[in-house]
Amino acid sequence: MFAVVKIAGQQFRVQKDQTLFVPHVNGNAGDKVEFSQVLMIDQDGNLTAGNDVKAVVKAEIVDQVKGDKVIAFKMKRRKGFRKKHGHRTHFTKIKVTDIA
View 1 (cartoon, rainbow, N blue to C red):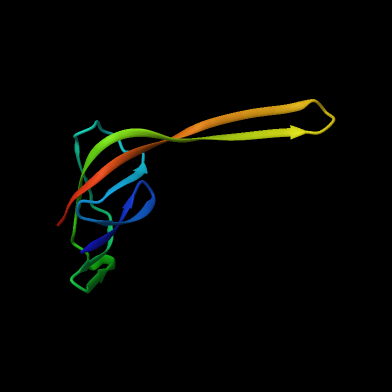
View 2: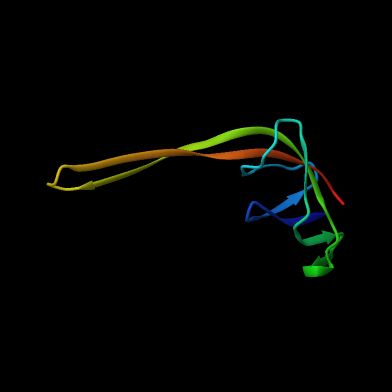
């Protein structure tokens, strides 16, 4: 059984007991969250999609983490212009506990 769920504007294919990194979701480690925007669900080969889906994905927040450092470096040759900018994107590690 799997479901396609929309979390923070991105779509994820999730299964029960799966751990994945999603864009930042408010909450602390151990908090329970529910995602009600389920786009598609597969129950033993029976696909349901669109407005017919009446499911909720329940998950638990495992940790709040940062991604790898990304550096944007801009330079114009012979002009003395150099600009270095870096950032680390915030992610939330969640574990799917149930698809109901």
